Amino acid sequence: MNLELEGRVAVVTGASVGIGRGVAKALAAEGVRLVLIARRKELLESLAAEIGGTSKPLLLARDVTASDTPDETKRQVLKTFGRLDILVNNAGGSRPTDLDAYERAWQESLALNFEAARRLTHALLPLMQERRWGRIVNVTGSLEAKRLNAAAPAKAAMHAWAKGLSSVVGPFGITVNSIVPGRIHSEQIDQRLHPTAEDQKQFASANIPLGYFGDPEDIATLVTFLSSPRARYITGEIIHVDGGLRHHAF
Image (cartoon, rainbow, N blue to C red; front, top):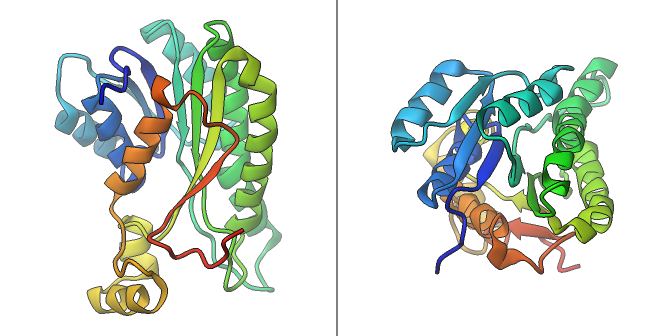
C-alpha cells in the first residue's frame, strides 16, 4: 500500500531510543523528511547514520520540557523545511511513586508527560492550519495503574486534551490520535521495569494474551499509518497496542 508520505515533514520527539527511534526509521522508510528531538545528541547522530539517504534529518538535541523548545523547534522547522505535516509526541516516561513522593516529582511528570506535548503542539499547529492538512499522533500510556504512578494523571490529561483538540482542528484537515503502548522493548522496560528475560517471560505469560513483549516497530507501524492520508477518517481515538494487556473492553 502506498501511504502517500513521500516528501512530507515530521517532527518526532523522544526520537533517540525505543519507540521514538522506531517511529523515525519507519517514517524515513516512507520518504518522510524528519526533525528529530531528544536530549542525547550522540544517539540522534547514530540514528541519522542508520537512516542514511540523501535527505538528512534535522537533529535538535533539546529537552522537550525547556521553555524555549516549542518556539525554537518552530523556527528550525521553518528555516530547514518551510513546512510541517506531522507531529509525533513521543517523549515521556513512567514515574512510579508512593504517598511520600515530593511535590516536585508530580510536577516534573506533568511537565514531561503532558505540558511539553501540549506546548509544542500549540506552537506548531499554525504550520498545519495554514496548509489545511496535518497529523498529530501522541504516544501515551496505560491508565490501568496497579500502583501510584505520577505519569498516569498526565497521560489521562493527554487523552482528554487530544480528544478536545481533534474537534477544534478537524475543519483544517488535521487529525489527532493517541496510541497506548503495552510492554514494548525499550530502555525503560528492558533496563528498569523488567530487566531480565525471565521476568519478561513470567509477566507476559501471566498478563499478555499474545504471550510476549512488543517491539518498537509494532508501535511505529501504526504511527506511520495514522500519519498518512490513508488515515483521513480516524481522529480523536485512543488505540491500544499491547498484545491484549489491557483488561477492560470499554
